Image (cartoon, rainbow, N blue to C red; front, side, top):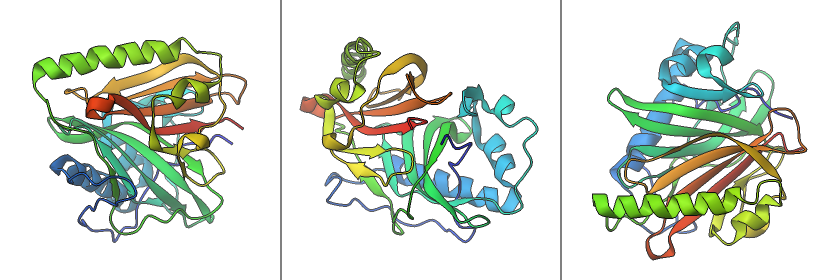
Length: 276
């Protein structure tokens, strides 16, 4: 079932906490961008509790932000006529993936709808702007059980050596080649398209299922037209969404790619919405 705007928020009492790197995910040092992205997510969640859920979405969105209702729409159109819920959803960051320069990041973690007992996970793409971090894509899915996240997010970290402009240009070329190779498999099994370029611990999130890790967890999909995409200024993190064929109206995926140095670009997060 496609869930409208289930990327939602953390307990009102949530306060800024340190970010830790779990050995299961990475052993690289925690960066300033990761701390800032986690803080932005918590502030977003807190604002939803204090000012209203949909008001927080509107005020925190980037100018080009999109939501799926079920098709992708600009947030201003997606929220037309939507009433504020009496009890806002609560959410908090469980995992952060960032670029080296901090201009782009992904935050994902559990959400809880106290009013109805609903549970799931959300994903937010954050863009650094002159006025702070703004979200440019937000989505969520239901899970059969509460997803444990702990008090400090785990980190999916890039390799940040060689950050100069020339290296960024080279990374951009490599990414475009990778994207073209994957796009050439549109309409064919998506899992096979990603398998060779996925991180061994790729995070996979599908509706009505618990998050899983590893290439074996990638679902069989057939993807169609591009929906939206973006990348960090330094080309160490990129994301893209494409329609999924043979699924529900508005079905789509989300791919998050991260630069891993000599290993090149790796798929570190893959999500589907509306596949069932």
